[in-house]
Image 1 (cartoon, rainbow, N blue to C red):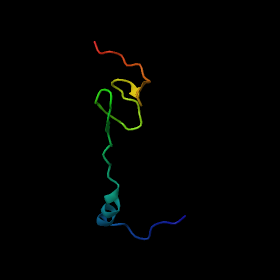
Image 2 (cartoon, helix red, strand yellow):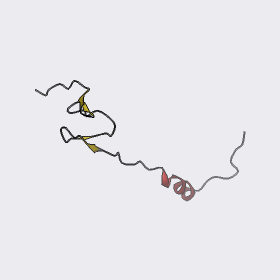
Image 3 (cartoon, rainbow, N blue to C red):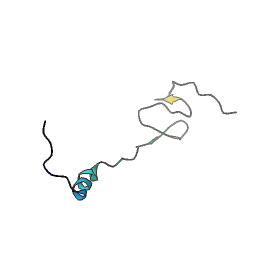
Image 4 (cartoon, rainbow, N blue to C red):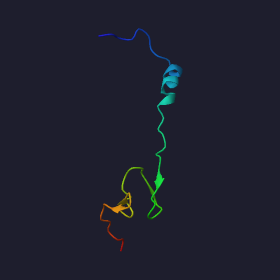
Length: 61
């Protein structure tokens, strides 16, 4: 199995990791309740997806 000949410097390691950062989650707005939700998923607040009720959401008491 191959082993490295020389140690990689901190600068070289940091340059390689420059593109590994996390990206922000793209959120969309629910057309029914106008809450932020993940795209292509049912709204967790009102339980609708594409104009249909697909989840049973409990009312907060």
